[in-house]
Length: 221
Image (cartoon, rainbow, N blue to C red; front, side, top):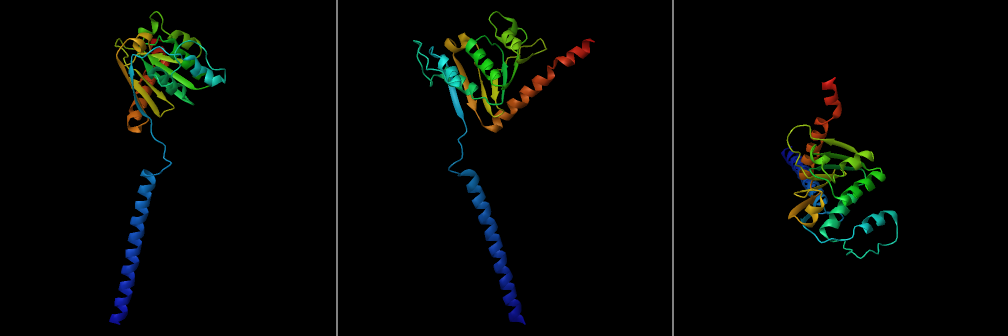
């Protein structure tokens, strides 16, 4: 009897060991699968500095229409900070949320209009005073049917960031002006790191909802 109990106990210990080993092995395989997949796409992480040389931007838009290559005399350089920034913006497929202080650059406006033409949902949140300065593109974009809201308080809306498709963040010191691109010392961070992107998404939604015109319309009625 004692011998039989010993054998049975040994079998259960062996089974327990096998189960524990299998569990640990599966957890290990799952960790390797998550962190060492050879086909895992690399997250975008990029830093751009300005000012930048004047380069052609026409070919960036012509590529979207399958037109002939641009033959203008300007430098055609996809790796310039300016063109890389425009290409990231043009990569939007579903949504583009813009939070900008000053917006007078025509190339950026062209990007927004091109995305709007492709049925990308574009929302712009901006400063109520700077949207009215000479050269601002905000009025033209709003007339084209793009949703625009602005800060309602007396303080500046000084953010400068964009979120592409709820996953790519573009942020930094750069205003969307020609002077910022060609003259000023500016920086841009571009990332798909969700821990960084998500707070910016939340901030945009907060500002957008707080500035809903219907809230202020109801207060004046």
